[in-house]
Length: 123
Image (tube, rainbow, N blue to C red; front, side, top):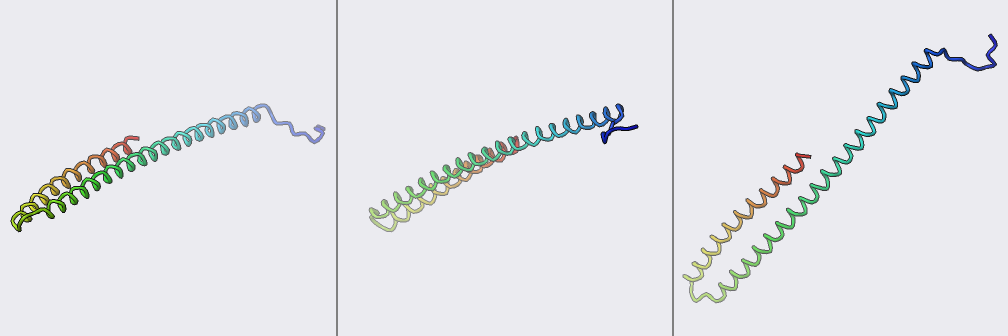
């Protein structure tokens, strides 16, 4: 039984090893595919969240600009008030309009944040 230093693997053992190697390769390919899909899904979620956060920030900035503008308008009206009764009436109108605006703005910000949360959860 001279084999010149070579190892002869029996046919059944070779077939078994090849089948095991093939199964391992298939499992590895499936793992890589799943990892790529997970990475793509994560990237999509991050991009959606970033976009939503940017939109939410822009909305909040528009609201802040609007509120500041209203405050300047109120200050301008106060400067032209003729008496304390007019100041009180202007102040009451300003507070009432600002409370309504802030309530509307909070609702809109809540809706937008809800959309953001809903879109992130649906991915």
